[in-house]
Length: 373
Image 1 (cartoon, rainbow, N blue to C red):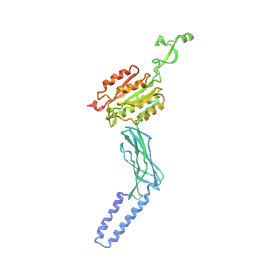
Image 2: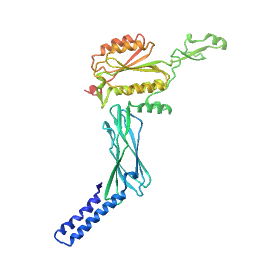
Image 3: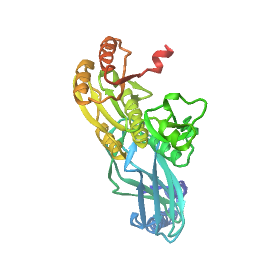
Image 4: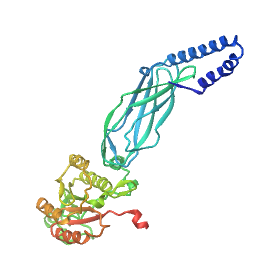
């Protein structure tokens, strides 16, 4: 229990009476009576404020929080009090989270609900837990503040940032991908997969003319092709020591994981096969390319617990392993950090050997602080 400003003033008013009572004996009874009155008022206000059981406190959030993003945490207070109540609510998020606002203040009417939200920003992936919900509320006379807590302990997992994936999916459903700078286009005639027969146009190549269809229809008919689907894409992630260094408090490896997940989500939605591999001084995880949204969630679970290791990446061992596992031609996207310079020659050498069978693409992770310096 805490005294409010009004409660403190009520007690301080007794000070002159008590001081005078030391000199005037009859005032002692007045001082004693005032003190008893104060205690009675405080006790009545404390009792009327009611116990914590008159409130229902609830916390709601996504089952998987996104790394490095502002995740909303929704809090609800339901009051069974017979009067309006002013309160202060404090949650106990994990200490490793950045928090925008620790204490929420509000008022709730009798038998009504109050809702609000605050945001947390996790800086590391892993398993965490929220603690208790703490509530303070005033009495009807405004003399005291009662407090209580409700056990709302709940585990939570911090996954790679899924908010970009959700945003892409939302804009895709609403046909608003132009807001991301993306535009769907049909690359007709630029692939080798047959699409349809159509009438000849002056820009068509003669070798695309279908002579049998031309003879049947008595006019030139060409074969239209489209870009191939069901292509294989492999994301290769360097989890060596250079990927431990942070950029804006987030490890470089986490930025790579977020990019790989978005790549996997987009590619799987386009019908391509997506796979991944992580390595440092040895191959850590390997997932063969497959189609479908289920592959994206398998990638998510595998990448959830990946951590950077304090060793140099061994490109030779990683690419040798990949050559044994991935025998079909694929687009191989290699995410690595070349700022140290030591592994650049080895990467170029082994990526060149990889180019005989696949199409390698190196994505070098940069550090904005280094570029500014």
